[in-house]
Every structure is written in C-alpha cells, then in structure tokens.
Length: 128
Image (tube, rainbow, N blue to C red):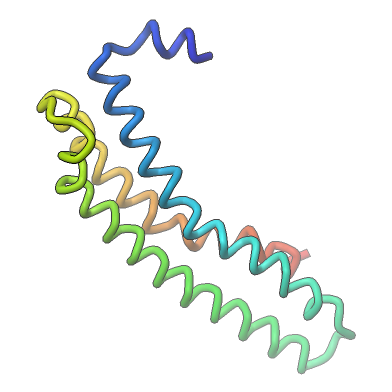
C-alpha cells in the first residue's frame, strides 16, 4: 500500500500527508482515553442488578461522558486551529504549507466529533 501511495502522490503531497498524519495521530490519543475509561468503568455498573439505581448511574455516566467528550472536542479543535501557526516549524515550503492548510477545516470537523465517537465506543455495552 505504501508503494501505491508513494507512486500516486507528489513529493509535496507526501510531505503534507506526513505532517497532517503526525498531528492527527498525536491529537487522537487525547480522545482515545475516553473509550478506555468507558471500557473500564461502565461494565461494573452495567453488571449491577437491574434497578432504578442502575438506570440512574448509567444515565449519569452517559451524561458525564458526553460533557467530557464535548470538552475534549473543543480542546482538539483548538489544537487543530493552531496548525496554521505550528506548520511553520515543520516546513518552510509554501506548497506544503498550502496543502496542510487546505485540510485544517476537515480536521476541525473530524475532531469536533471524535470525542463523542470515542466516548460512545467505550460505553457501547450500555446499549446491549
């Protein structure tokens, strides 16, 4: 697959892809902690005997995870928003900078939702 990508993209495209992928991989780890946390705490509550207390706890966990995921989304969008300033530390080629900046709106949209997706993944056992 690397061979196909390397032969279909120009050097400018590849340089921009490396920068974008590096930022993406670093920022993803912030929200990935939500699904790991959910997978750690939710099963214990879910395995309680069905009762109003269990329902209340699961509802509270769901609400809390959505609040935290929204905060993570704001933080990650802010980090991506700083990419136009940070990209200058990685390259001085204006063609590469232009390619990277063209992707910033898509990355912002992605990371606005990424926290909620990760939080939902970690709590998926609630809905089974």
